[in-house]
Length: 152
Image (cartoon, rainbow, N blue to C red; front, side, top):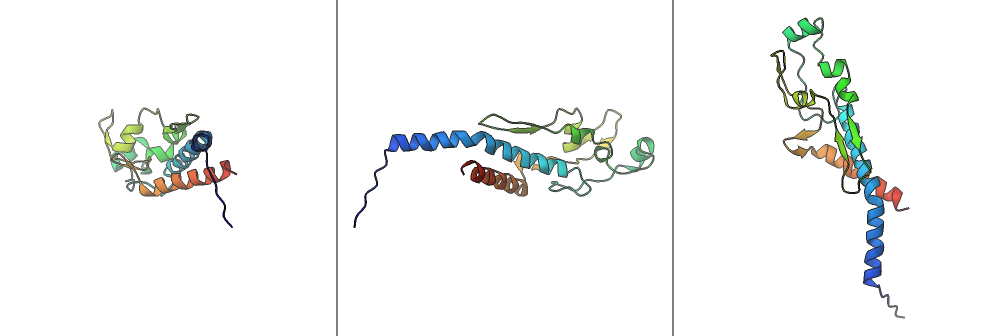
């Protein structure tokens, strides 16, 4: 017995591309949400995937501004964590971002307006210009799960 299958290439490729276009937005959103979840968890006591451990507040700063509590300010008040947002709906990308004015200072360290040296307390799981391998895998897993769900 012999069977021959012929695929009309243009129609087949058009069908595949249409499915690909259909799942791009939900997959981008799934990855952005996975990334944002890691970022939000990084504000917890130990963080889910912090690139480095967060040092406690300096004694002088803690005494002057927090009654001696050396818990990092970004954990105490939650303003920075609350500012984490997601932009989705574009088939080419989704973004996780913050417009908080002191986000860069916390992520990368530097000097505050009051002259305090602020050590880096990164909450985005990024080293240099690279997302950490752990978070990449979380995003890939989220995309795969969304693909399975979307293509059923």
